[in-house]
Image (cartoon, rainbow, N blue to C red; front, top):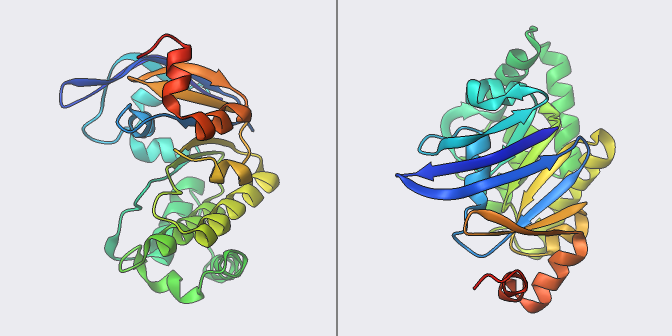
Length: 248
């Protein structure tokens, strides 16, 4: 379970998230929607303890662990996996090198190269990624669609229990979005992780179907509903939902 209680987050001494609470149980899919600049991505960065984001009030617990007391590395070891809008490129470090080290750090075991390579090749076939990408630097020189597919390789190999998707539909064409979202939906059916989706649009929610949809405004969750709420937003816009709650 991921549980956020009364969280205030600041960046550059400006309050971005204001008294936010959210509980996401194992196996649940939650989507957060809202206009630009209301703090959606800040929630993700606060969970992962990204530099420049300070939690001045509230708590974040995952699997009974206080994330504020852990490093980003330790948070990852708990099984939390993050895909950002624009995955970072890392020159000089290949996917295979990073993934072997990550698996070893998580399991505290020596990784058998033959078994590791066999599994990587199987995943590449599953997600339609050339096996040559295993030996390419992480996301370096890749298009937006290739970077998202590359992140799928990491997802399937590391097998996280909690997935945070920060506008992964950003920059993807229709076909690429369908490929990426369908792979995550397939992973969900196999592993049943909890998933937090940050998005502006319903296309990804047509494939990764949320149990709950939350509307964020001025750093607060102002409305929660089922998937139908997302389609109302798509049809009517955010402002109608905010005015319904007396927010201008």
